[in-house]
Image 1 (cartoon, one colour):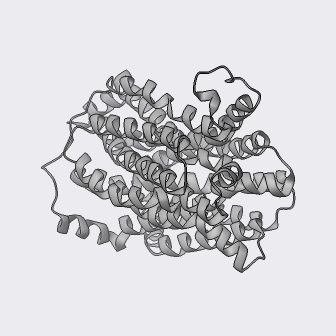
Image 2 (cartoon, helix red, strand yellow):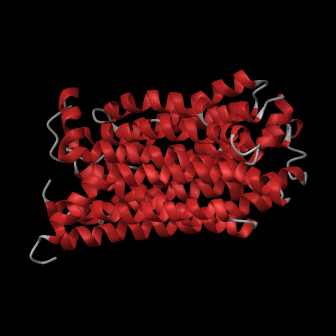
Image 3 (cartoon, one colour):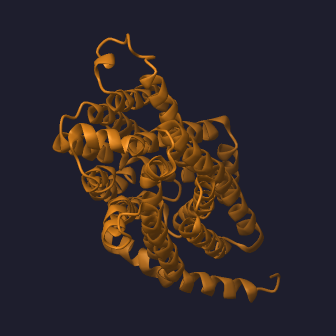
Length: 435
């Protein structure tokens, strides 16, 4: 497919319709993944769990299967119809979210969370590969940025809309709903969160599977490994950075609502609204502006300039982590989280484009799946669980300094990992005559 044909496809209603529907699917996936963070204490009380038990449900219970299924799902997405693969995953994780609300003990809840992770594993690799085939290099940053809004709004809506919905449940709005009214409020919340996926499912079939550009079939695993370490290990480093920042992301997202409720006397609605507002405001700016700015730099100085922009993103995350340690009021905590999210999400979006442009078509979904596997194992798997462990053994049970220290270490590690190739590309750009 020629470049002008790509431009035509990328500007068509069909291309942007695909982005919109995939963005909605991503929104639902993040909502179903994170809504548990809003009802930690009710779940803990009802099922007689500890903070560590709940952290395993938030993190490792989801992350392990998400990571294990990610690479096979990515390889599968490089071969089969990506739209159909996404639709199957949506049906599975939506049903599993409902099952979370029906769990009777830790183990049944854990099994349902495992199924959520299995269903969500195929979404981002398949969607990112599909979107890249719909858009030319001049529009990929913006297109993937708009798609990433699903993650931003999904995380925000899990906390904000989830808090509103929980308030309605506790106010008796569903008191006459057959069967649903017999469940505890947190269980009703999980059941209701899983239902929208089945409404979106038929709409996904409006997406037209695009032709795979410049594809010569599935690449051998040895060739995939060689491409990961090429160019000073750029692709592999971006994957590792996503995992490092994921530790900070999920340490903060998992425990901020609980921190605001326990230490600042907020209700679930108030805590969810404040955290959701911070995340959504920063996330929208990071997703759209970050993607568009990287496109502008790529048009002016070439695709390698995107990597230099990653350094700015990770420095913002570092500033947010530092502010988390120093914050005293709920407003300061929310502001610190907003700064962190601005850096982390913009780095996520730009890193996605960097990876996609650094590998051939035949391994794009596999590459994205690898980054998600690292994020799941390191970020989701460790982030939520590290907070109660560090709080108990280092800070005498205090959540906030534990969250700040973990996110600070994550940001410093991200800068350390990406620094060598980023500096190399900055030097190469400065040496150009038009720099």
